[in-house]
Image 1 (tube, one colour):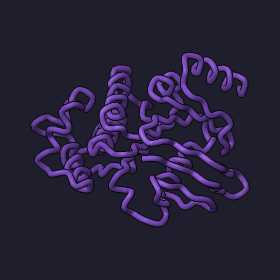
Image 2 (tube, helix red, strand yellow; image 1 turned 90 degrees about the vertical axis):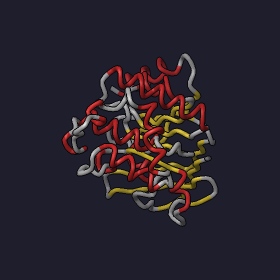
Image 3 (cartoon, one colour; image 1 turned 45 degrees about the vertical axis):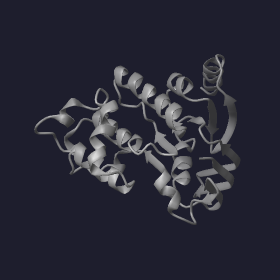
Image 4 (cartoon, rainbow, N blue to C red; image 1 turned 135 degrees about the vertical axis):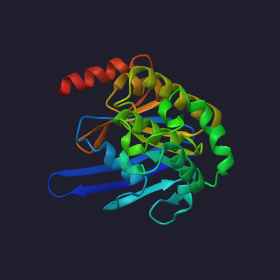
Length: 235
């Protein structure tokens, strides 16, 4: 599914103004958003998901303005932070809950989890699994990300998916994201501070600075060095 932004503005008092005049993310594209703290990355993602209201402009999922309808939400999934979790549930209970929201038969959910068993914490599948709230920060994130992957959405939105994950889990997550995109054509939109991971996963990367997109790059072998030079010049 294509994602488009037209004349988008979000203002927070006198301190921050986000302005994205135009942006199109094609169906099946893997798109990364990078920038320093406070650049507006999470604000962009929350506007895409209609979690906050824009002061002006429009976000569309396909042909549908996100503020004007709800049907697009069945085709989009996301994980931005642990506020997306229901932490008094056990992980498997949470996966069943999320599956139900996307119309997945409860009997199919265990099979859909199989590809992620080496990524998820093994304690989630034990005879006496912990509640989500009792997991480590990294393991909570794994649960949230897998829940977002579960319905194989048309659009997947992730905020800092590699943060707080151990190196092995970061590698497995990149493999899962590539597989989802390759097999289902999911449009992937993610933000990250990790330039190496985002260039590994994303076909296109935009640099956000002070609420504005200042670079829009097709990923190549030179992209990581270009991003390093850009952020080094900002230091």
